[in-house]
Every structure is written in C-alpha cells, then in structure tokens.
Length: 240
Ligand code: F6R
Image (spheres, helix red, strand yellow):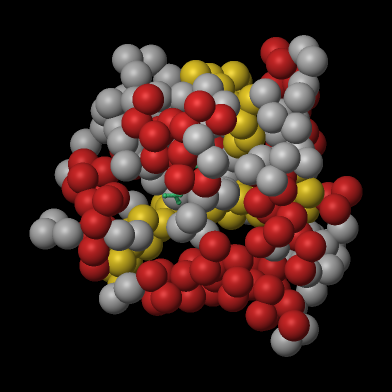
C-alpha cells in the first residue's frame, strides 16, 4: 500500500482528483467506482471544475459502493441523491451509465447478484474510490468476525448510525441497513484509492498503517490488493 500524507483536506482532494482525472483522460470509457460521505466532496468539486475546463465524462461509467436500505433514491439523504447533487448533475455523464445500488430493491438477494454481475459485465472497475469509517469500515463492510465477499445487505453498526446521523434530522431517521459491495467486489478494481481526512480517522489510519490484517478493521484487508494508494491528511495520519 502506498501511503501519501498531504498537508490538509484541500491537498487530499487535489491528489485524489488527479488520479481520477488522469484515468478519465487515459481511458475515456473507464469505469470509476465511487463513494459518498463527506470525504470525497472536495474531490468531486474539483472534477466538476475539470469538466468546466473540458474534461469529458460522456463515455465514463460509474458504480457506487453502497446505498441505504430501505430508502427511495429521491430521498435527499440517499446516496443516489448525493451523487447526483455533488457530481452527476454537474458533469456531462450519461446518467444511464451511473449505477448506485437500489435502496428499494424488492428482492434484495436477487438485486445483489445482479449488481455483482453488472460490475463484471463492465469489465471491472478501473479505479475504486473509498473513504474509511472511524471504525475502519469500507463501503458498509463493518468490523465483524466474518466479512462478506460480494454485494449484500448488511446491518449498520451503532457507531456508524451515530456518525451518519449528522446528515439526517433525527438519528431515528437513519436507515438501519444498507446494500454494499463486499470485499471481493471492491478487490475486483484494478486500482484502489482510499481517502482519510481529519483526526476522527486517526485511529482507523493507525490500525491500517500497522500493515497487519484484521476483520476488526475491514480496511486492513486492502493490504492484500496489489495497487492501493492511501491518501491522508496530517490530521488523519496522526503520530504514525
Ligand atoms: C460511503 C461509504 C462509507 C464512507 C465512510 C466515511 O459510500 O462507503 O464507507 O466512505 O463512512 O465517511 P465520511 O467520508 O463521511 O467520513
């Protein structure tokens, strides 16, 4: 795992955006794996600026990591709404080429199988962008004795519900489950970029930086992937 420590959030956003931008320039029909949450917002803002300067997203395809369940895509807290608001509505991407798990899937197991098949049919993800939870989760693969390889429905941990309640009016409104890509789905990406910003991520980054692997911190499994770049700001890197 390459670890890039940068000064602050602005530098982290710029470094992450540069990787996605160069991927789009080199392969206009690339497949980008995308994440939501607070961390990638600055990166998406930069991509929107790059679009204004001529970067072409018309052939790009995207696959998002996760979506709350149950939650309708029109709900402003849905990850579909997040992606539309921060990126898709502001660039020339074909919305038909953007994929976010269906928070209203009637048959979840069937949907999860189809999502996995979709990732494969796109020929794999060129670059997968990840954030990291304070507890070390990636996507919604939460710390546990066992992790799931493929796209699945999962219950959110209490600390994740609390962390995400900042986006909802009440904690009670946070959905208790989500559909998420699994560890093997994430590992299908040719390249993985994981972003960590702020002191709240320092514990998770510290565990990651030990280089050891434990399902108690799912992000540590990324040490098994051949091409991972961790970009963190100084606050997240802490005293490592
Ligand atoms: C979001 C996702 C989550 C977040 C993580 C960090 O699609 O998969 O794993 O990346 O919870 O969230 P923020 O960036 O809000 O700290």
